[in-house]
Image (cartoon, helix red, strand yellow):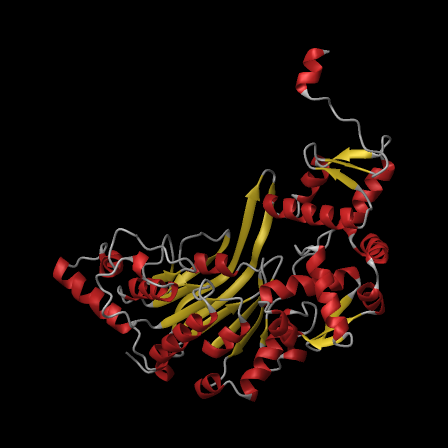
Length: 454
């Protein structure tokens, strides 16, 4: 295998102006917007981004499992049609066949190849040895720990010697120590060029994991997914030492991902900025967070004096970035807090909320929701305009589906319902789908057995 420096300029796979739409009834929802990305030989690239940024969708498009709506995927200067034959994927779930042994599970990757049984077994055993599972060849999945099962997944992916190895959140189902151990061993194999693959693309939501492993980091923005920044990773020695340089990059990426409107160059001067948002929706994208979690975050930051480093907040509350980002976004939307220079900062109203009793909390939340959340304002307006002070959700849901996929439109409406109910701005009947004001509950149909007796 060529050394990394000699391989670095060779593009083995590329997305060119890729767009992906979700198509529903009379609508097209943009999921990925004009993605252009190259994967070079000798690179381990980490794809970072919040939920809804299309990380896994992009990975599947590059693997040929999903077709782009526009644009194309280029494999060695040829347009890719169908599944990418040069890629193997390791997913978050182990997906092992429980009735097969470890070596038999690994051999599955070779069944489509023109190898006889002896050669399949030889290659499978070599992959098992490479990944550190020798001695467990004849064990069944039920006998293995989570980390060992994922090693089988890696061996199965590597046994075909793919040109590119794709990993979709490969460590997220493992406990912290097991994940750390497996990451370090894989990085050793990669840095020593012992892995039978020429490039790695890893989807992750874990910033520390990305910085510790990647030669290059690509950050996606959400709604729709687009490349926000593309930057080189740390030198290998700095990744292993986890010293000040490592901490600084983790902190900068955290600031970038928790400041969706900040200029990339202000936070990461070494990054190549991506494209700007293509369009605006009439409603904000509401993060799907529970009021209790939001209140807990406000209280935590208030105890730290009203300002705390976001990375430190995540560590203290044991939150992944995918869990913390929606909470910070909700604070910002509601005017209760904001992300500023990598810190979570409470506004004056946010401090009042943190110090308030339950009734005062509701009053503050009611004012902020009505003032700042367009979808909640729309619901209240439609109720006030309705002759009987109630309306069915169908028309509103249909309008949301013009801007979101149907599942996301439902989640957006559910979030607005949760926030509006907590604020006591309106009530909602889950069974009928009716909105109404609390003191004007709509008449309900009597149960069928009552109507029958009548």
